[in-house]
Image (cartoon, rainbow, N blue to C red; front, side, top):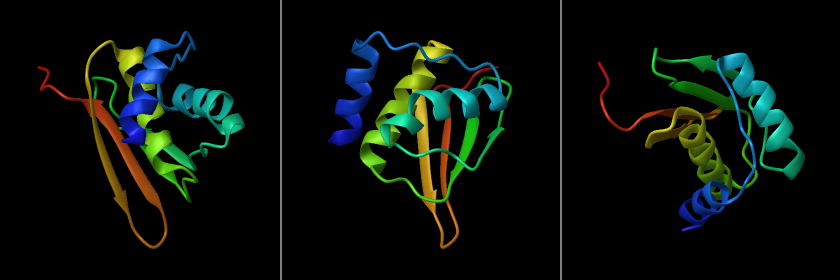
Length: 104
C-alpha cells in the first residue's frame, strides 16, 4: 500500500527528522512535510514517556502517504518500531504514534 511504500522510501532516504518533544514534532512536521503538501497538524501532544505523540489534523490530503512518512519519521527519531493509530470524527483526524512494543 501507499503507507508502506512511503515508510520504506523515507527510511531508505537521507532526510533528517529530529523532534524531542511535542513542539519539536510540530516544527519538524511543518518544515519537512507541510511544504510537500502532506498536511500540518493543528496540535501535537505527548502521550507517554517513551516518545509517543498524538497529532490532530483538520484534514490530511494524502492519508496513506502522510501516515507512512509520519511512521518512518517516528521510527527514525526513536530508533524502534512504531505503532500507528488513526481515528477520524466530524471535526478532526487523530494520528497517534507510539512504540510497537511495551516499554517499562
